[in-house]
Length: 423
Image (cartoon, rainbow, N blue to C red; front, side):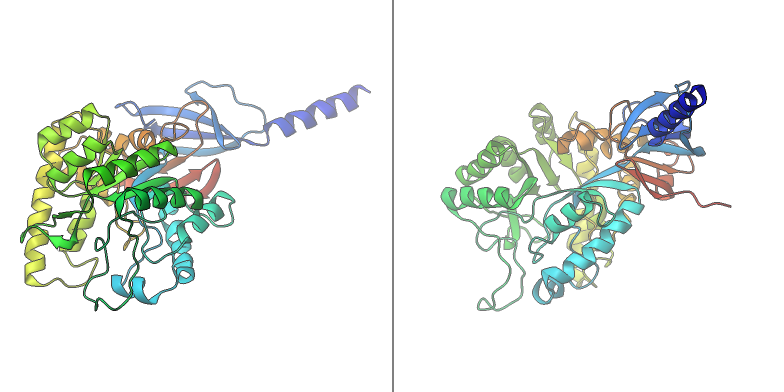
């Protein structure tokens, strides 16, 4: 009887502890504090972190993963992606590829993105892709395929003639996401909510519609203030945040006035406008890398001399804008927009640091600050009761931010997708 009781207790202990994983971190950036902690243990059960510390209680038969030679931090959150777009000619993608083809491509890009350490993305539109991003999000959530957690807008909302494929005859039908006037705009928001959108994206201005400058990417406003306000109000009524594609300072000021939640790109924003954003708790997602890749012929093919000059000027202005933002309390969030090069997301962090951001702040922009913007309090930090999204790499990112590119370990939602290579 005693032997049977002991066997029963042993079985219960095994059953109780089989879902536990202990991660031994050589260094730890927890997503909140500036200092890296050393020799910290993280206890994970299922998809949750149940304890963090130097001396924590460890259940029997807990699986141990030794990352004592690595720095561990929360999984990265990229707040601006286009996961169903891919390398190659943009117009060909939009006009010749089916949504089904893009969905297959997106599944590959999703795996690459996850393995680069990005465990969550906010996806802001994939032209001509139908509901590929929704299907991808749901397939990942059901663990049918590997990929980052996805919040998606499905498609942007914009006015007639704005954000279109250019260079075609007006008689050629191209993908359009237009809605005009408060009634159509409200209906479009409601339709996206019905289809499962997690966020709403708007275009404040469009140089495709009408260029307003010869040397910059600014364009005519897409909507009146009343139309913008209708869109934001309807999105907020549905519990969704609004991301505003914005280039000029005047467009940014209007976006602030109507109450968007984040301003994307913000190429030419002034310091006072950033201060207004901070007062209204509106986040700034600069996406520095994509414009430099565009300038360097790595996105849309070889540029003409005039296009090259415009992009060179824009990148300089963008860098100056980012430095202005750093002088203010505005919350800056990591976002890449580099749909052509999945897996290169962390290069954005290098640019942010190169242009004056402290490495610790850059890391927070991709973890806790990004989680705040996305409205996902369960991720972004390593602490008790948070979701187990963890990555690891060799080196100290506070001294050299580029080491974040050397991903050796990825855990998302408690499941391991990348493990250190055994010698």
